[in-house]
Length: 347
Image (cartoon, rainbow, N blue to C red; front, side, top):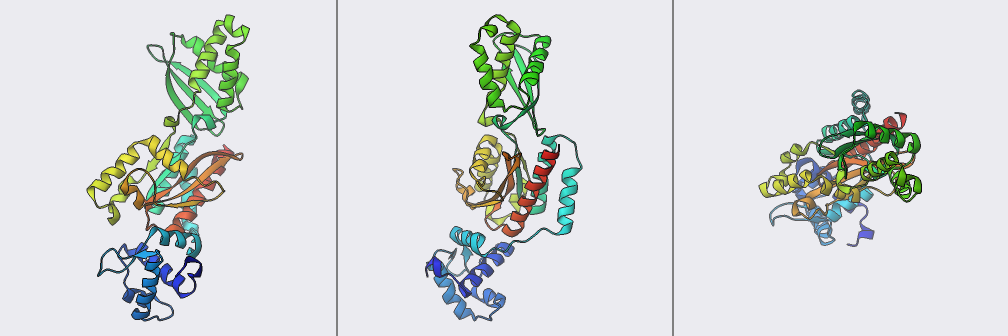
């Protein structure tokens, strides 16, 4: 049975099998599918159809005496072709909007709340990736003197996202000099992206004025060091990792260790999520994650970008076992992404 002729009763059977497996986590037998069949198909007829689905790679049989479970190909066909969108209830939407709107005014707090909401409503792992420093448009900059030539750099983007980092300078600087540098950056470069500002500062290094004006030299040094992009510094908010333990797919201790190690390495997690961000608007479903660990292949991820003024700021979504409730997860991720966008743009 080729994929292009997977129609009619075969589609209905695959949909019923996947929905039952998502609900129970147990292999689904022909007798149970016969009970679920709207057409009253006999177990014998279903066994023949299941054999065809297995031959085509949509389902497999984990044990000889067991029923069938979906394969990655089966899940993919289910999500792309068979899935019916399940809208969130009015109560869900009201609770989500209330939780996002009512909290601290900071953007970082908003993203943290969003990850918690995604986890709670989906009963899986919720995550939000904040913008990297190269994506930010400058609203405010501040430099605070620490010790041993170390300076705390605080950058606030137009959307309210805050990025902090500590840099090491060639020489010690007074707080007065640091205050001047922050005010100079805001006065001359607010509204520009941080990479653009850094390029302008590097150009200023070559100009004659910067060679003789010590204060300007310090601004250039602080700005170029403080605005340098680093892929490892993306903030990622993750909530609900303990929920994975409740899934039988991850009952194996070795698998759980691999999973939690993946979440501990934030830069690695950001890389995985970034590869799953949709190029088009709306949620994207990734089934089976390539994360360099066998346990990750049992995951599925629903992701969506959130944008501000047509610029992608970051991504958010839900991560869980491949037998997650895709219809609900897609609607949830879509709604939270739009709500976060609305709040960030308004602020």
